[in-house]
Image (cartoon, rainbow, N blue to C red; front, side):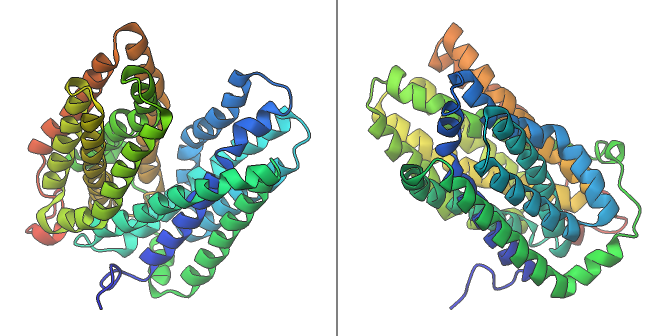
Length: 400
């Protein structure tokens, strides 16, 4: 019986398993964090700041994380990043006041940035250009299924104690760090990574001149703003306020998006590897635009379900192709290059919910969905002019 990992380097399923543990752990604390913050007698805005600070810390420290990856190697920094997240979660569990909780969650954001940059760097280095899309989609599957399973138990843990989810989160992330560290230390590909640490560092300004890298930055930013943040922040309000439905109706739509994305992530990655990054970006863009148009013009529950399904399908392609593009064009030590690509996604996720909420407040939900399309159209236009980046499909000299 064939498995999704049959032709992939052994590091890929290990990193996917680590991603599952990290995402599941984060899901444990997601419902507990604002409630725990409020237990210290602070306002709702202050409680929300604990969540926002984690995302802001990821964004603001990513470039530093990339430099550390270039200086000390992806393997070491991946383990260090995970242990920072784990230890900060443990300290957060013992917080005696609001400011301690705020500080420790901020420290966790730095560790999260280092882990993600390191893991992605390893993933892109150990795979060939005919595997990178599938490898990235497998890695993302770990996050997706972890983010589904974590909240299922996180709510129950809150009933036990507001601190309990942080203890469990600390344990799951530490487990991910130990497993990944022990395995990568023995792998053949890890030896290649160690040799690669002596290579010249790829400068950000060099990467930004490459069309494939430009497309990856644009796609990551657009996906985070116009698809992911819309799904998380705007859609719940649209369903309950715009369509006048009960919150329980939201669950079916979220499930539709998650199921479609979960079932198509790996096939989308394979498509990106076999047909090319350009086609993957185009299909992902068209599906995402279709989803947003349905949201805007089919204002009923059936349209909402169909739109969520299209959004999940589009996200599968837009999650696979950009990472593969980064892997195609990066050379030498490239932690900073990976970091800037990650920052573009984090920035879109930070700005998107605020901007979409502002448009919805000032105009309408329909206007917000149409504005989101403006973030996706440039991805499609850039993809139309994108040349082949898979070196195995190019005659020398390779010029992606």
